[in-house]
Length: 453
Ligand code: ADP
Ligand code: MG
Image (cartoon, rainbow, N blue to C red):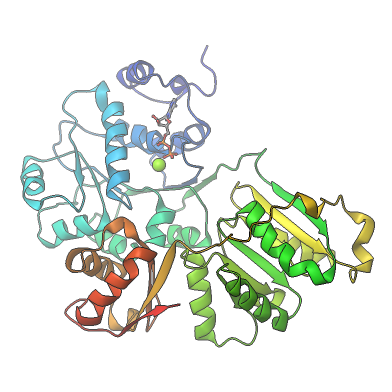
C-alpha cells in the first residue's frame, strides 16, 4: 500500500525511489505533494511555501527525472539570488542525484575566479545553478550555451525581485529555446510574483501552501489609556513588542506628522505618510520603509490605501478607527502569507462608542525603558539615474561590489524608478558607498548621489 504522500505514488524510476529512501525522505512534504505531479507532467508551476518546506527537492526531483544523462548538454538551469543559496541548492541536488552515476551539476556564481568555471563549462554539465550576474557574464563571453535547456527554475523568486534581478533574468531567458518549462519557487507571494509569472510562464499551475493554523493569525491587543498618556504608551508598545516593522494609524494628517517627529526625538526612527506629500516624497518614504531603512510608518487611512507591504510585524491603531470596516482593513495588513502579526489598539476617553467591547490588557504590563532606541538596519542611497538612463539593478550592484568594494550581503533592495534609483545599504557601509559613487562611475557614467536621512 502506498499512501497518497508516498513518493511511490509518482511516476518515478525505481532508482530514484530507492535513493529517496536511502537519504531518508520517507514521504513527500505538502509542497512536493502538490507540485510534483505537475512538474513531472512538464507543466509550468508557480509555488509558494514557507522556508524549510522542501521546495528544492520539489523542483530537484522533477528536473532530475527528466534528465537525459547520455546527452551531455545543459538541460536545466536554476537561478538563485545569492551564492550561498546556489551552493545550498547544489548540495541538495547532488544528494538527490545519487540515484544515477555521472550526473554533472555545476555552480556558476560571482565572488569566485572565472577561469576554473570556464574550464568546467568546457567539460560540460547537465545542470547549472547560478546567480544572475555571473550567468550574464558567461553569456556575454559566450562560454555558456543554454540552447538545450528544457527546465528553468527561479528559486526564491521573491528575493530575486527584491534584489532587482528581473531584467537580468529576461536577458538570460533570451538565450534559451522558446519552448521550455518554467518553475517559480517563492517563500512569499507579493503581487509582483504573479505579474512576473504572467509574463514568463505559460498557463502556470498556481500552488500556495498557507498553513491553516497559521492563517488569520493576527493577535489583537487593546489598551485603555488616558489621551494625555497616549504618546508614552506608544513608545512603550515598541519597547515591549519590538516589531521589526510596523504601521501606526492616525485619524488626521497633522497627528501623523507630529507623531513621526516626536518619535524621532525619542530615538525611534519613523516617517509619516499622508496626503500632503508630493509624489516623490511619498516614493522616498515608501521605499525606505520597504527596504528596511525605516522601521515605522505613521499613516492616515487615505495615505495607506493600496500600500502593498509584505511581512509586516505589527499594526498600531494610535487613534481608534471610526468604523469596523476600517479596523478590519487596517489590521489585515499584518500577518500576511501565513506570518503571525500583532494588532494593537489604543482606546482613550474620547472613544466612547467602543468602550466595553474588548478584552483589555493592562498598560502596566508594558515595558518601560528610557534608553530604548529603534533604528533601521539600512540607510538608503539615491542615485540620480534610472530606467530612462538604461540603468539596471545589476549595473549598480556590480559597480558597488566590484569597484566600490562593498560586500554583496551589505547591499539590500535596489529600486529602479524612471529617473532615480534607490539602494538600501547596511548603515555602516552607506558612507563608503556614497564616497565611492560621488567620484566613481556606473556603466562608465557619473551620477549625482545623496543619502536619505
Ligand atoms: P525550502 O527551499 O522550502 O526552504 P529546502 O528545500 O531547503 O526548503 O528543505 C528543507 C529541508 O528539508 C532540507 O534539509 C531537505 O533536505 C529536507 N527535505 C526536503 N524534502 C524532504 C522530504 N520529503 N522528507 C524529509 N526531508 C526533506
Ligand atoms: Mg529554498
